[in-house]
Amino acid sequence: MEHRTTIARSGARHKGGRAAPGSRGDSGGWHWGRWLGLAGALALLVGLGLGWPWLHAQSRVAASYGARVACACRYVAGRPLGDCAKDFEPGMGLVWLSENAASRTITARYAILASQTASWRPGFGCMLEPWKD
Image (cartoon, rainbow, N blue to C red):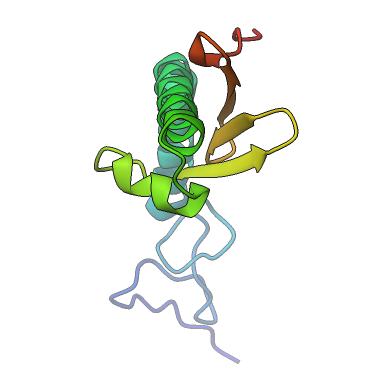
């Protein structure tokens, strides 16, 4: 029986028509797509690591702003809490509000990144709680 070596468009072939190791038809090797995916994942991790301080600071600012504005809306202006989101700046859609009516506090959360509480105090108005690092 005679074995022939064939070469196809997809790359080099062994005897019997199997793909040669490392050729484009070999499913066992690392292809450029896998390397590209690995490089992309690594770039994403590095980007998140470098951008985390900025992202965390911005989320704290958004939560603090939301808590302060909603507290003033609710306890100074006397409006319902659901109406207070109208006072937010554009882009504050990720800020969620909750109220503790007994202690007269409003807590704002920015996604899962940060939360901040503002308390209404007679004579002082709405004050933010100190940040906890």
